[in-house]
Length: 461
Image (cartoon, rainbow, N blue to C red; front, side, top):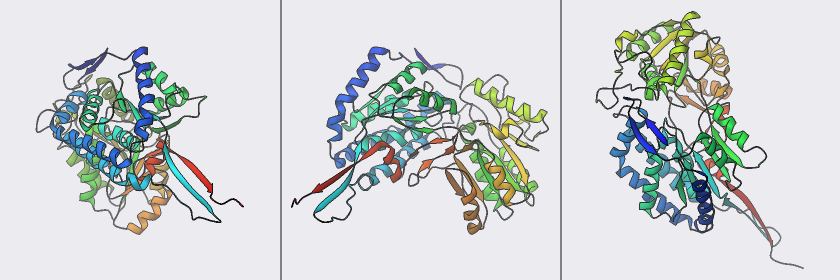
């Protein structure tokens, strides 16, 4: 059985039977049978069906928000934003689908007509995480369906109700049977599903270790995979930054969703001229957070997803302090912080360096290290000193200088004067151990399709 334990109070909030071999086989067979009809469906009809499904999800937004909070602990004041973000991304991909999937026609030459068509791959398997269960899965599910693929979703055990919400929405929208399906699977059965020859592409969002497991499962086959993995996203605050704005945005970027964001801020480098003032303001704003039951209206920081995750962050903080770092937040200000539970106060560390795990390894929790740097070169060097590269942010009033620095930063996305955001018009991608492939934007359709070329000679001498 799948049992979802709420981090709020330890109650089991969802129980579902895990699929066995027969259910997996049936889902694969039904998906393959549904594919020819769906790929032949005109794109305008696909757009209309998918849009109706998104509208259905939006209409259920309040109930969905409450379910997300119960399953993974994000404060209820914030979870409605996930449904709004889902709609924004999906509607953008729906809008750009015809142009992105359009036939490419080189000029005719000497009686020869040539064109390239984007064709769907077949069955796309989506393995989704719990931290943003809709915002991560929508990046793959919607463009895959628009491109003419059939989709099989394996949700996280922490947020299984998201899969049922998708299923309900697609049924209400009139999506043909078995074009979208979901399965609740064990870890081992997930890898067996991924390895099945009937799976044509895998979209995985999760840990680096999980990405390696997917790659290993695909070994020996030429099946593609898009992998969005870990992050240790940095920010650099230059001496000319608007400090009020930088502090407000970076505190939110570090602690929103209890720091459990793929592109959350985990390292901050601050120019020495403004370092002391920045740190002082950063700590003052962090101390205004309210840690507690995420169902309460005044809570701005909920529990982490489970006690073991919170304990990992606690160990990072303790190790850093033993190595010379200073913790600037007094946990006594946050009475809900209790050792051994998922409730963890936010923490700001200074006097840190890259010998410490908290500055090297993904924390995925409410802790951030702030390090003083002497100049731009030192900041870029420290930002690039990481095995990850998902996003990075620059905070400065000099846009021209920011563009120069951005060219040197090893990352998938560079922000100027903002962070922790995903623009559906841009490719969402990472470098190094943050993964391979991309989603969203016009480029997001490319991994989910294959080009097929046509070369027709109309006249034969």
